[in-house]
Image (cartoon, rainbow, N blue to C red; front, side):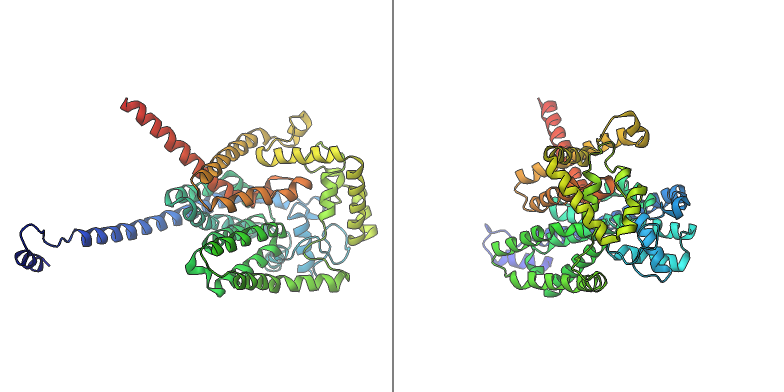
Length: 463
């Protein structure tokens, strides 16, 4: 290389410099730095997952015995999920969500109850081993969520914010507590939906937009997630519409891709729809308990965000009515009751919606003495939840100010998903399914705040 450079210099006029190797060296250095950086990010992400899993498993060691309370036939062990899983494990089918043998149910979607039932079959119904296994699975689902959190944040705001968000998720108190103390689909749905959101951000890229196999996988994952918790489907038209709009902007086709995704979604969900139709002789797309949740949240009792007197699992009169009428007729009765209540007290209903909006984003419901006796962790929860909301909103605002196109799907998540809980009931596990997006925005907001503060201090020091 040196000889070629010298010869070239001799053959050319002295005023023209010899061909330089700086460009080649610079490109090589940049490639080496990029490769080194990629390895470093992977190692840090792997460490974040390990730390996340360790923290959650440590919490499981302290909390798993909460599931073993024998009250009401081990009701605290998974609640409706546990009862349906018990029925499956005993060979009675997808049935009996409460305390009596009331027959087939569509109270819940099937994915998580069947997972719990499989654990019951292998390790015993309501056993200590089953509790540890199920909470460990929840912990694994929650720890693995670090991965899509990192990649969706990197695609939106860069690698530094991505690593900060992944580590924030690893030590996130809500994620640790919910994975270690609740046998429910929350952690599984959170992982699945976070992967879906990451795929949404990626599918706008031209190199993926034309791959029908990727779109089919996207639709299949939507279907699987819906069978864990169908509430996330509220975002489907918004996120798919955003991808299609982005592809249209760059001249890419999108109709065939979207059709493939929707067809894959339908293929996954169709067997459950068919089961419900054959069992109940009417169309029940996912689950039938919407009007019960409406009744629980809108019956005049404001003492708690989920008052005991309105749910058949905690009210003897409601349980008796459920057992007497059967599931479908009971849900129809709740529909009549709550619609009549709302028509008679529309301003109360609007007030409850506003109250649940405040609760969703700040954690505040009441400071009444009896309420705080039942919910002693509410004051610190209010501080954490409010701070997280403020930082997330600041991050979202900065993303829009910077013209970041990925700000739009984050906005969709914050606006659309909570709506169903505003009108029914709201609680921490319900919002947790979108906590990854909130945490990414909060990390970005905190980073921008710190950068602005540091820049301001440097300017003041310069003067």
